[in-house]
Image (cartoon, rainbow, N blue to C red; front, side, top):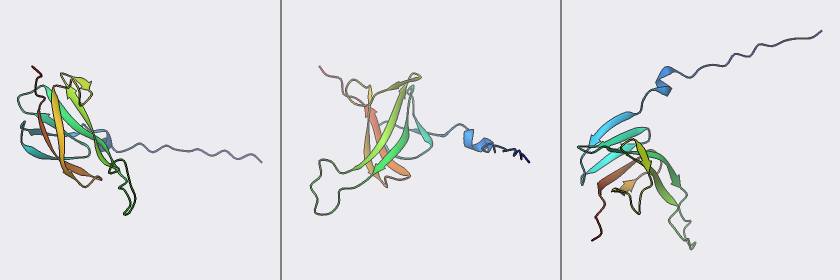
Length: 114
């Protein structure tokens, strides 16, 4: 006797696909951004969001090349993703973070080279 099973896929709730929460922040001022939020830079056509975190600190007594903790950010300018650093028109500094859910950040215009 052959048995057939019907498997139903459950759809995620509509809220899981909702647009991320947006906050408006001022250049040069420290703000808290949580995973899943977007910070729009006031008066600018730019925004920042946290893509994720690395939280693998260097063990005590070990020699490490870097701390093993990072906040991974995405900068969007005029609708396009821009790599932070180098020629990016803005810089975003991590002031402090729990490296799990949120970070205190500060965004500013990148100084122009003369």
